[in-house]
Image (tube, rainbow, N blue to C red):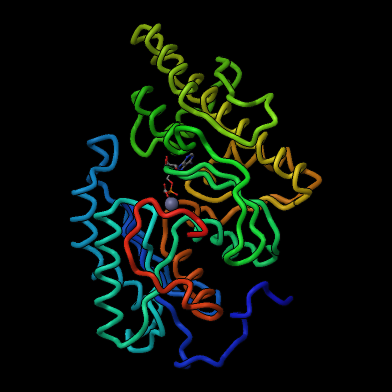
Amino acid sequence: MEGPFPANGRTDCHKNSEVILGIETSCDETAAAVCHRGVILASRVSSQEIHRQFGGVVPEAASREHERWLATIVRGTLEEAGVRPEALEAVAVTRGPGLVGTLLAGLSFARGFASGLGIPSLGINHIEAHIFSCFLGCPELRFPFLCLLVSGGHTQIWEVRELGRYHLLGETRDDAAGEAFDKGARVLGLDYPGGPAIEQAAGGGNPRAFHFPRAFEKNEELAFSFSGLKTALKIAVENMTVEELASRRSDLAASYQQAIAEVLVGKARQASERTGIGTLVIAGGVAANGVLRQAATDAFRSRTVLYPPLALCTDNAAMIAFLGEQYFRTNPSSASSLAVSPNLRLGE
Ligand code: KG4
Ligand code: ZN
């Protein structure tokens, strides 16, 4: 079956290797990957453990860790892929959105590495890469599709028309879904990152035990808000004794997780009805959540719902290398800016 990108099957490029290196350092994952004609040859992600003790990411520590480990991770990834640095055609690197210091660490490394090899660097939008990560596990995916992008910093619904053509249908007014998981976990005395911690704690819990607010649920607007939900959890916990909290933690976690999953899926369904687009992709770290996946699959029974492979939901460089390759083959000038952009939006 023909893929949606001209990259698949093309051979007319400067070097015969057709291999792109991707680098990702937008937050607390140091990652590198190697992509060849839309296929990932190797992908490594090192999650910085240093932040666990603080319950969140400490920007200065994150930048330092990237600087410390990037060369080792890139070398290991190239070795695993069986690719010599000289065989690379280009280096794709995240330029935003993200933390300014961590983005700078990745961009400086990528520019130095690429210029040493005499090859171009491509600046990639992290959000756009999350959207495209689904192609890596689902080659049957075709434009147009809807993308529910749910990460630590973003909760948005995009209409994805083709590479470089996107329309924002709705987004959160305050916290992102991942942020709601992280803040909720802190309230419940669970570890960072909060998403996996809440999902684990919710196992065996009753998702209907507590009724938490679902903002904009009955509203036509494609908008999200999670700050009220977090406050409701906080109030519920404050009204409990230590023993009560210990015995009801899994019910609280399950009910909180359910509220997040239901609003996300409800709005994705509204977006599908409004646009007439029947394919939904869920991407970003929160897409790893099993309850969200099940709720979306149930709600989209007569339509299609797709997710990236589990390992590619959270931050990784495979998605950066993959998107970098698409731009390198089709429109490299649109990825030529290497300016760090912590608040980069899609379409800028
Ligand atoms: O995409 P990502 O790795 O980084 C950003 O670009 O922000 O997303 C990280 C977010 C965190 O807030 C984390 O708690 C959440 O994704 N997350 C999850 C799960 N795994 C990661 N949320 C819910 N369930 C999970 N299993
Ligand atoms: Zn991300």
